[in-house]
Length: 138
Picture (cartoon, one colour):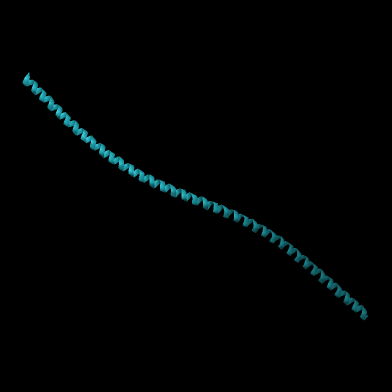
């Protein structure tokens, strides 16, 4: 009778241990599944990170190119400003020369007008003298 109880007890312990073993196997399987899923997620995140690094490098390269183009455009703009300033200086000099030439022309025109008026008076006087001389001799 004692032996039967011991056998029953051993059988119950064995069943309990078997149930415990099944629970542990399920936990180990779940843990493996979790670890596998996390490993897969980590690999995906690493790929995403590499992709983002690649995009970041491309954006950085584009930014550097754009900065180079901007610098060249600024240099071109500065050159255009220098050329505009030079052209403005040339224009002022030319305008000054034209104003001086206009004044000289106006002066010459006045002198020509005065000479013309003087010649007119001389001609009138010559006509009067000629008429007067003709009357006296004629």
